[in-house]
Length: 506
Image (cartoon, rainbow, N blue to C red; front, side, top):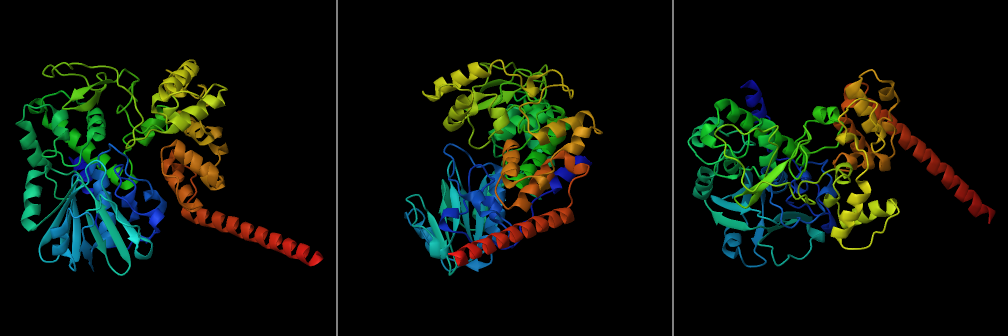
């Protein structure tokens, strides 16, 4: 119970912190992957993180909406806005809130609510491709045909495109709040009420996790990973689940959504376990995987209410009252736009590579890179069939080949197998790495690669278990970066003096 309480109370706090303006090319967007636009809150937010357009066919998960909510609270709350509806689909609503001050924004699951003076509430559901972009007024682009709401003041312009943009009063919010289920990212979530509601249902727990009237904010990726970590089969009837099983489901729901909120990405694998399994870049256990990330057993997939459901029946055994899976098959792997795998993992499953990556991998092996994607996938799969990957080896000792891993990954594996390994002491520390090396290492772990060197160093230190023994502390980072800057400045002065001397010589 204490663990559950701790997980549910590590919740986002919405502040009125400022935001950094950006150029039109660096617009802040509410992107379906959820990591993206929400990072705009606060002065340290990387503007480049929100440049990409919303991927088609991706639904904004609950953690992403909460991140967008935090960002927009910093950008919109406490300021009066002139409102208009460029495509005319929110004309009356825009007129009602024009000139009004935005008081706050709240998120419940995948729904966003903006509160304006006068008792006005704007309800937003981003759907599959919504975005809420913020621009410097002087560099704001023209609205698009999908822009339903434009807000502007003397400094900032925002464009909102979403599946649902509706105006109401406090009663609209109360109505929606009552219809939605419990959001693991909200302080007012009531798991006891959810338990009573869930325990009386004969539907499968897999269906109810996706039902926003039960678990608000959980999507298909989280469903697969939450039930895996809880050890519960998706087909199990909800009314047969014990309170202990429910508590584990709720705990992992809160923990994983909170992790997604903090990291800006759906990362469900525990870092220590990933290292132990010799797959430090692994991001998910069973979603869009053919083999279980933990036991390496076969993952099954099947249709559940028109969504693909996943399970490892070794790690999620069916109980006596759980019906057998009908139509189960080996998962059809694909390149997910909202839950990307590390390049290291994707190279083992060519189906997940994009065209450019497939061609590069084939050319590196001296093979033809011509043809349709299906042909390229088959060609690379045949070429890599005999490759030995550490993740596939039944042995996890230090003697297993690690040719496909970076120096830091090798050191982390050595740490897991032998904490006193000399290899750990010889590893290249992040502070000693070049920016290109830092970005390559971060990309291999599926982590953001934007920012200054100091940001990259700190991000990699935080992600590495080596940080627990001998990691560079902030003061050392400061000194090293100052030294590096001083050396660079000295080199610039020497180069400038040499150039001046050459000029005088002429």
